Image (tube, rainbow, N blue to C red; front, side):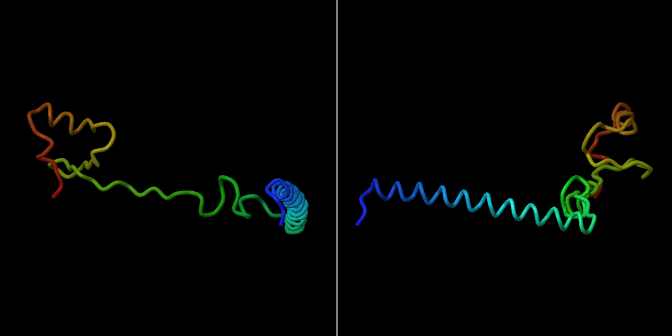
Length: 102
């Protein structure tokens, strides 16, 4: 039975062989992929890479309105800067609670 030091040496040798096999196989995989890309004239986006890749762009869903003006002309989600219409109504003595959507 091998001792501890011999097992460590075997592990190191095996790790080196693993690294070498991986480098060789990755190089071959890259060559094959490049050949296929060139053969079919593919772009990064078509392959699912890059900013324009399908499925990578998130769809923004509008935030539901939380407030509405008395005339129903303007709605506001409660996010971001307070619209001037609401600002004017508050300055006129109204409270935001009056504009809550039910």
